[in-house]
Image (tube, rainbow, N blue to C red; front, side, top):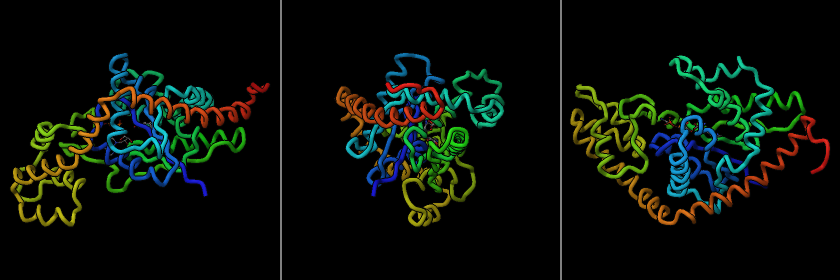
Length: 318
Ligand code: ADP
Ligand code: TRP
């Protein structure tokens, strides 16, 4: 029996944090042996946020090293970047022609930007259409993501249904896969951990940085269990181990934070070292990305041929 398909991606917008890891990236690693996996770098999505050549290049290599360091194995799954597969943007255009403005105006990202009175570029408005194309080209069964991306996968499902209704059965409907306990990893202030809130702990932080982040975790002045410290600690140790410790050390925030620093360091150090190893040979890492792109291209171009035929623009064989 052929394996089920997994697909997901991360935008190269800066160093990942432990929220990205536990919310999404860890699942790619855990599932890679059981699925036919496609994990990519969403560089064209990132262009909405980063319009600087050097920074973009650095970030793309950065995500590639992150993927390798967390344990993604190119022998088990395909690692590629979005911009290598022009079918993503081509299919996004076709989806643009089927999707109404009011429908996309309901998307969280657009509503948030509008609420903040930000000037919104068309790329941000259309973001979910490119994401729908990313997903639907490969027919994944599951799309592992953090809770904040759930709506985007639902939009991809709606878009697949609409296309299928108009042009006939073409796309499989994907399922989002959200780890229940990790749906929203909290930041050091208790709000959702996010690069944009500056409340994050970098996934590859050095010891001193881990220390600084943990010491800055916001605690209330009560005598009980420090909520924010506990929530982050719980990512690294199960409640059954952690609760007795926190109960016996109620109010001793400094001690608990010191323990957390050591637990995070123990967890991050091996990945941090692996990342440094991969960084010593960037051409080798880039070769993995390029070869992944060649594999992904075969699947995407086959699917796109079907799509062109269905919409009626394929009037002769190539
Ligand atoms: P950020 O909000 O820091 O910019 P991204 O939007 O780049 O993060 O998210 C990359 C992936 O990590 C997505 O699948 C997203 O759902 C997941 N993710 C981001 N922040 C968290 C969090 N705090 N908890 C769980 N998952 C998260
Ligand atoms: N939008 C996702 C994020 O911000 C990244 C992404 C782009 C993605 N295309 C995707 C995730 C397709 C899963 C599937 O994190």
